[in-house]
Amino acid sequence: MAASIDEQKKKACMDIDALAEEMRGIASFIGAHPELGYQEQEAARVLVEFLVKNGIKVESGIAGMPTAFRGKYKKAAGPTIALFVEYDALPEIGHGCGHNISGVAAVAAGIVVAKHMTQGTIHVLGSPAEEGNVPDAGGKVRLIEKGFLDGVDAAFSTHAAGINLLKLDWLARMIIEMEFYGKGAHAAASPDQGINALDAAVLTINGINALRQHIKSDIRIHGYMSEGGTMINTIPDFARLRYGMRAQSGAALDQVLERVLNCGRGGALATGCRFEWRHTARPYSNLTNNTPLMDAFSSNLEALGETYIKYYPVSASTDMGNVSQVVPTIHPLIGYGNPKLLGHTKEFAEASCSAPGFRSMVLAAKSMAMTCLDLLHNSELIESVKADFDKTRNAQ
Image (tube, rainbow, N blue to C red; front, side, top):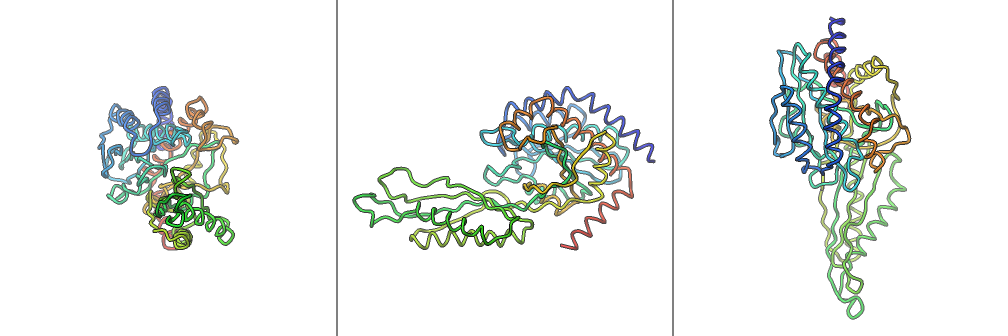
């Protein structure tokens, strides 16, 4: 059986090489036409066309999201594996997270796995709005809520990066808006008649800054003022803050949220403003990596002649974390070969439409396809993946 799997992997890699030119074309197109979350019409269109052209049936507009999709191929009874596809961009920067690279890689991996699998089911799940910059961001959370991970035995995707990195600290994340409603008045003639919403927001910012001294070092709080007045000679009657918070766990994040909100309530109370707040994106869970699944993935990277870093203490967040709470999951990073390259920058967006980015895309597709074939055809591996997931979940 091992020899059979190895032969399947070899053929899968050859097929990905045969698709590489088409993959570069699609990744270049998506990279040159960046679209924000839930607006990824062109990206979703070309990715769906890529799947359909290669014999994968696709449902579009799933889970109430017009740009979400599921490609599904079933060979026979056996495990069900889900590959997640991301394709949204960042405001102004474009594909500074490399979703044009990782998304095409996941689709290509699904196409090739469907060709070589002898049992089981492969799902290619197009998940919009991973970035938290649009209202109600977090397409994977909506897919989970609508049951699209029911019956899935393992799920994964890769992420673009400067280097190959198996694990980092994928933190739980919330994004909120805090609004302050005051009362406008002439700033010179009748300031005593006004209630200054800008002052409430500034007091809140100062309160959050003071709070940082009294929270654990792994917790992140970051944000900005998006509105705070429109003219110099009028007391601002409205102000809005937009803040993100991250922590190692959802429970810790809930505690941080309450303390941040108390800063907002205090600023409003001190100035006489009315205070409101809301989540602007779906809360993201921390990501729990499945050890046997990661071991299989890293073994395939080694078989492809790649080196990697097992863990680096840097933090980020993703809605793949929510996936990891319901099915065994990994989310390794495949690099462009430049350790100085930083995500969420224009330089990264440029690299995502360059030869190093395209090489990374092919490597990501191969490593994902090989790992899928391991899961589909190695019963001992899939059982160990499930056992590790159950053990981790019970320990939480």
